[in-house]
Image 1 (cartoon, rainbow, N blue to C red):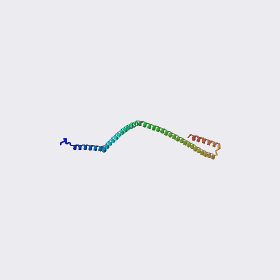
Image 2 (cartoon, rainbow, N blue to C red):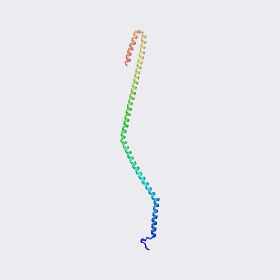
Image 3 (spheres, helix red, strand yellow):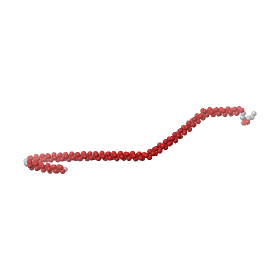
Image 4 (cartoon, one colour):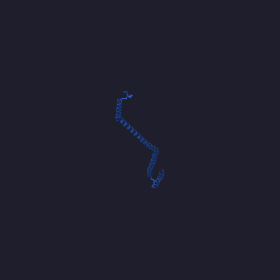
Length: 171
């Protein structure tokens, strides 16, 4: 018996068993290999989607932060000017305070110098008076020694005191 294309029952039987074996093997391998690979690919796809969503959210946040920083940079000049203005005001206050303190100190020093000059003037006057008394005493001693009467002696002392007093008070 000659078969068309050499198809016999044994060949068909082997072919069907081979097809069933391949199908069972395919099912078995799909359970063991393909499903874990599909799961891994699905997890990877989800991770990539989450990463992209996170990246988009981060990009929006970065844009918002950039906008805030740009606004701050625009306002930084105003803030710097305000700080400089405040520093100038403080410097002017300090300058005024220092000048006032210096004026007070100068007035105190001048007052002290005037008091010292007044004391020196009084000392000089006292020294002058002492000299006048010594001169008057010497003169009186000479007058007594020369036996001048008291009337002449009084006149001489008064004239001497007047002369010395006028000269001493003028200086």
